Image 1 (cartoon, helix red, strand yellow):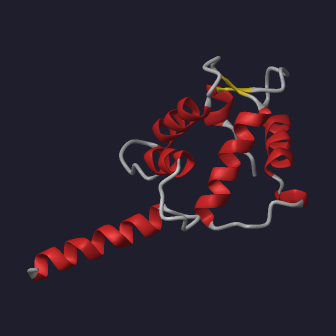
Image 2 (cartoon, rainbow, N blue to C red):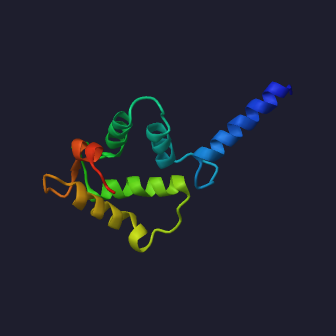
Length: 121
């Protein structure tokens, strides 16, 4: 094996380990979606949030409900290595709080504009 092959293999393994946040030696759907949406450094933040919204709107109704947002929060926790999902860190509780704060229309869901333009903190 040439040095180039060794370096390339090492790079591939490192990249895989960065993506495989739960270290189960597979890239699950959440890891893939998070990487595809957030890992893309091209475009503006609004453009990336637009992609995130479309990926996580699994019902394809143009809205993120509490469950869809909780799945996004869980994927974010997985990516960050956050293990504590209790109390204030509970993804469903966080999703409910975020929706309550950003839901301008009062339908207990976020449309794309609310999601992109929202200011959580």
